[in-house]
Length: 241
Image (cartoon, rainbow, N blue to C red; front, side, top):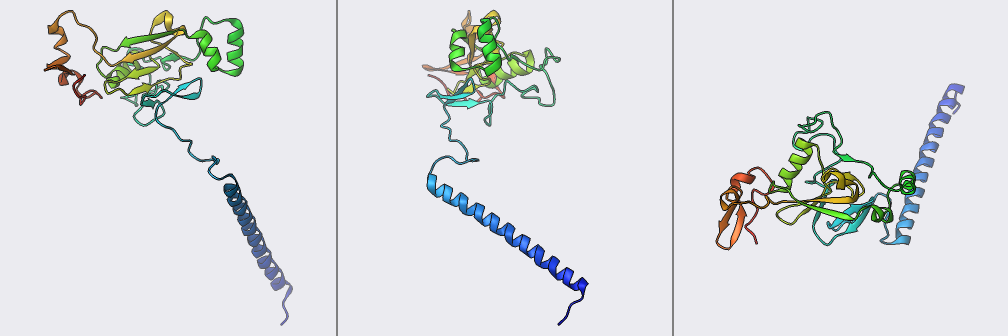
């Protein structure tokens, strides 16, 4: 059988395409074989793309995960409170807090009043754990006067345009809203040298009558008044202690 020149060109093109496909398939098989051998060689070691394990008690300090021994929900976790976000937490269609709508950030990205040499190093290399120990010497514990972390974050972030590093809720959960390296706005002049923690608690009251607005006494135990915490994370909190 003889072929015309046009038919020969067509046949060559078909075989050339099949050859390229075959070579591509061989390359893929070679790559897969190499990957399989690599997996067998390193056993259970971490692979690119593999999720890094977390135990749920980590806090973030200068970008590093540090175990705390307590349940922690980070700002990147589902159900967390994100102090970095510009939009409001409960009204994401709005930017900026209600009281200061032109403000986007609720924290300072740099701690002020630090030695010049440290400032230059941090600007060049970022914060390290060692550098933070030179600056932070105070932990400020606030009772949030809100009764729950959800209400506290709503008031700080969505209403007032303020922040803290940690929220301690009535069920014992710790929420971290910012890396400790950030300058949270919670204690005025002390912000530069402190870590801010908001504890879910309505605080002390001068009379029992005022306390009854937020608390209900049940025998030897006390619980939050449901009317006072309706719609917050404390609504179903059990009595304590």
